[in-house]
Length: 145
Length: 145
Image (cartoon, rainbow over all chains, first blue to last red; front, side, top):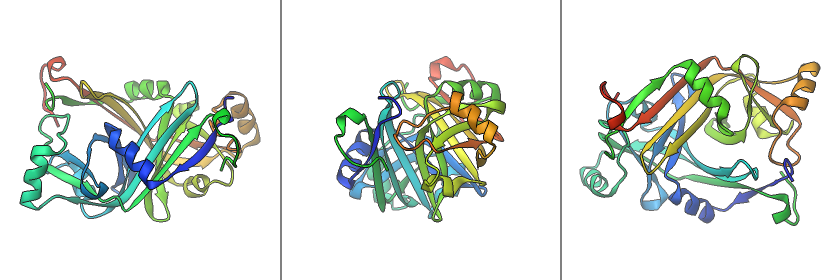
């Protein structure tokens, strides 16, 4: 029944599984004292970290290097009013180690946009949370909150 | 060609048109001094404001009432590496006017989750930005940045 679905928390393992299969996520940060958000393609790397690629001189790099950011992925079915989302929260750092940069240049993500392949940014998955909205009929018991 | 697409800015009118057709967006805010993001269904209301519905006692309401937040919608084609995103930035307020609440209760959005229909939150679209990643072949000229 519409408007009657239920929310469930996802554990870290399930959240990481969903994160790994999403092609695009959204990096959430602060830019000039305002909340900011930017969708980007990415890869999941060692330790469950999120790696994305962007121009070395981008506003994004200036805003996120060395600070805690959030990174969100989701998928939903608007008809059934169901879906899931996963949020990783942790420190973002530009990858400065040359060997690490080399490895990521071979195996890591590549920006969809020309001229944006200067640096890799790694987000450490310090906090991982996930939630799932399931149809009421699929969820026998439990409170909605 | 992959990794060779181009970024374009969308004007406010085109951004608002895309916003209005998205079923789900993501509210971006600060919770306990950390960046936070939550996907929600919503409606576009008077003056291009974004209205969503949630529980009156939710963490979201406590975190966003009276403060500037961002609200993001997007859509993309991972195969073609193209897509668009729109971000609205502005002050969020719980709707406290009784007549306004009544009107929105009849015509406004309804939470997908049971028990979350306590209050409406309005985000004023003070800043509206949009961007579009288009295939290189579709975009004859111009710089990628």
